[in-house]
Image 1 (cartoon, helix red, strand yellow):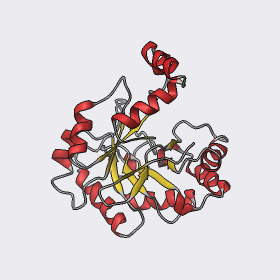
Image 2 (cartoon, helix red, strand yellow):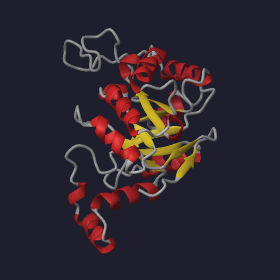
Image 3 (cartoon, rainbow, N blue to C red):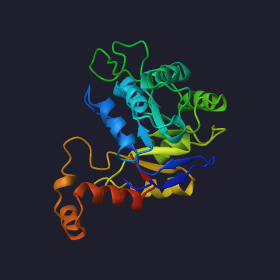
Image 4 (cartoon, rainbow, N blue to C red):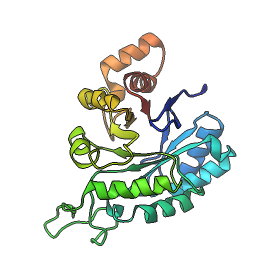
Length: 252
């Protein structure tokens, strides 16, 4: 991979425009994949999350690559059952990754779930519905994000899966530090034009996850995408990554 272009966040920090996602990476494969991506393929942005359950392997892959920590941009996310304890979860993530700071920390979902429920990640009520804490205010989560940012434990903070309404009503009016990134599922089947345009107007960088489509999505078999790939003599995946990088800000 040639040198990856970067984007500048609102605080001036630069973030590589293309990142390696680690969601659904199989146990035993993550370490080698991360190491190869950094050492051989030229990646400098690794996107991970506490809820993926593989941050220790990601950290081992980073170490195995031999690429200096200061050359790597690492993103992680705070899960919904940890909205009350952001710094506690962050410290677990840092230990597993083998680093003393993150380049970007995101609110994985803008919904808090019961931290004392019947499951560490997906607690359920007796009726089978998710055990969501409807009285928890997103601003209280964000205050903790601002605190770890001010401590230097993270170099940038942002959100994920946040709508314009959620941001306008529950976060921006109360934030001392505005989110620098909103990570969303975006691809040609789910472009979210209005939200993307609004985020750009707010100087919030848009990052696409699942740029090839989420699990079992038919994007790679789409006739139009394959026609474009044939004309350009590239793979359908390259067409989708190129679309994401051109249409939005970055893909991971």
